[in-house]
Length: 554
Ligand SMILES: Cc1cc2nc3c(=O)[nH]c(=O)nc-3n(C[C@H](O)[C@H](O)[C@H](O)COP(=O)(O)OP(=O)(O)OC[C@H]3O[C@@H](n4cnc5c(N)ncnc54)[C@H](O)[C@@H]3O)c2cc1C
Ligand SMILES: *[C@@H]1O[C@H](CO)[C@@H](O)[C@H](O)[C@H]1NC(C)=O
Image (cartoon, rainbow, N blue to C red; front, side, top):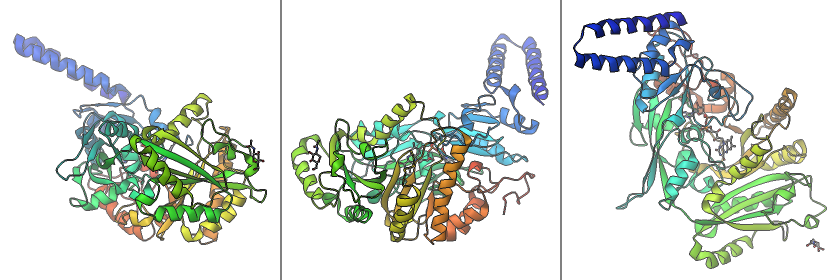
């Protein structure tokens, strides 16, 4: 097969040389340039290594791309943050235009093989969701573009960002104009398209909703290869399908993201609790209050009641110490840390301090066990990156991460605490264990993202690091996760996985509940051959001819 492609190229070269010999100097020069271009394209796409079928190779290599396809550097596309699954694609596309993406999707759509495509943002998935075994991975970071529109004449400010841009770069660009997205994630080295395919939540989501609730418009390449601009008012079905759509309906090439005036500083507060009921009561009271009388960011975490690295030592800010004798002897095996921020501008520091103190007076945390610091807004939003650099130095970043995130309905969060936090995970999880409330009213049920069926639900994030990269340790952590979901099911807790990972269609249909039929309908409409994001394991592309309409698995 390789030899075939090679022979083809040789033949093309020969015919060029033959024509070249008979032409005038002008056209000879043009032909020479054409020849050089053909050679460069040939080299850039390194055709000789194309491991796909002859038909797929020929069709792909014939595309006139602004960017290029590589058949050899596929290792990065088989890696992700979870570091538990490594599926090698046959090719990687580095697009330089949206047209490149559309052209490759159309070619794959027309192919009779079972070739698939995964857009890859920053590859921070856990279970290979951005991988495409023997398919094509599109390296979305190759396509750049951030344009800030500061807003004028009553128009609200927004930023247009390419799907592969990282949130940190979007934020840096908007901050230059005194603006920022309203709803971020805890960690910013994630791509715009990657988080919008899930939801994008953090301590700002209680007020503004997840990131998918803060987008006005998208440009999407569908599974058929159409380039479509969509919004709540134009091609609305595609717009809502793609948001939280796990990459199943289209590739987000551009997103229009709502901005707000950015503060330049935040007061960052952490308060320690021993009573879970008081802790969640405070979180819920704070999230229900009007903006002026509350905080701008509300999260929380479970920590072990010990000197451990993930214990109470992790609560104070740098340069501060915690007086552990203030923790009551009656406290249980775990403690709870409420984390808040209040935005301000440098010039209002005094009035704001007073406001913050009066807000804090009503909280029920352990007396004196409250800490605060003042940091620039960017430093706060980019806080996890500091931790990343530290872990990288210790060689603890590129280890397996059997993470699991759940949405737990408010009515059952106390039951969840009693068994999961206080018993099952009482020794900690060697990593952060997040718990904070979200407001379902800020989510749009037309979107693909699903939540529990209650107005308030909690995000519970088990962000664990396997200390040994031994398979046994990873396996036991995954088992521990499974025991948590099994507990929920046994007790009838109507949880949803966030960043869901399932591998059978039965599980997926249970996950989506009564939204499942809509999900399948949208798949048939926008990606009828099940080409996109095969790593999610929701649909499988079957081999079939171009005319075969029955390629989508039932
Ligand atoms: C350290 C860390 C911190 C995190 N913190 C948060 C957090 O605070 N809040 C939160 O909500 N999540 C958080 N996440 C989870 C994160 O939002 C998801 O893992 C997200 O998918 C990562 O984006 P990515 O660009 O790395 O996506 P990838 O892993 O590259 O892709 C994820 C999925 O989206 C698809 N996809 C990627 N780009 C596109 C596109 N342009 N168009 C269509 N589909 C696309 C892929 O095919 C794949 O199926 C965190 C993850 C990590 C590792
Ligand atoms: C810690 O708290 C205890 C109890 O209030 C107090 O007696 C002690 O002096 C405190 N220690 C420090 C270092 O502040």
